[in-house]
Length: 356
Image 1 (cartoon, rainbow, N blue to C red):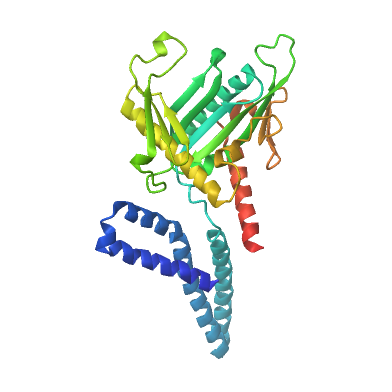
Image 2 (spheres, rainbow, N blue to C red; image 1 turned 120 degrees about the vertical axis):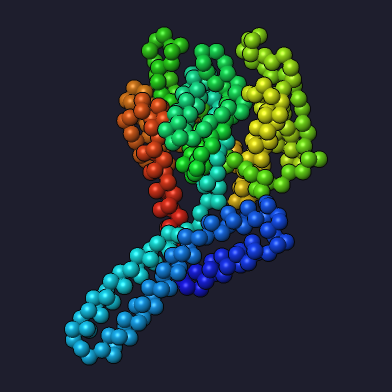
């Protein structure tokens, strides 16, 4: 283990030297990248320092026990030895967890996409419920949310909505929301009282920064057009909506929520970077489909990660076989019990992989 730990200590010291180099310190993006890398391994380096110190103290006490003849001092030394061995064990456990590969995107903001799936108007109403649920969760966490693009239908239903949630560790908390969500309830349009099953899909993308994705200006095709809406008052009279296409990949992003063309362009670029980053993550993982499609599936009822059952007041996450009968509170944004259980399962899976 010490050999592995030494590599982190050496890299930490190397980053210190690089950031002190005048040729590097003048490059803001490079400094930012190095600072993020150093921050990501700081806990390992600090734990390693404590581990080395404790090992040395343990070795010293063992030497004392071997050479000591005074029984009273020997008894004290053996007590200290036991304490140090306990400390070493705890530090080794902490280091094993610290060495588990961390998702480099965990600290990022997120771009979320919700789309109505199978189920007609009821699927659109359910998509609107999910959007409100995530909005309320963000409010509970003290995070900010903003709509980037939305396509609504009648009855307050949502066909598709793209929005950002900004807050410390937002991606780490929300990344497991990706997938197919289904609802079982009696639709407001159902006169016979029959329970229907409908679906919506959720995709959670880490918000990419400029240092994450290198996009050149000549690789972009930018279209400006009038924003659309459900009525005359909602249709912009000037061309402020923006659609940006990344020519090499064909990835597009649209924003028409703001009245300012500049703000719409900034938001669209944010979505574009995140979608390209998702494709790069997918490529690195050698998956066949794009990261977003891999996350959300087709919207079919059979592809589900969670079910919201209204007649029984129950929400079930099928990935961890966990259920809660607090459906109303969950739809009001009280998601933390699911978030915590999913994160614990992720950690357990990583620890299993690291020890096998």
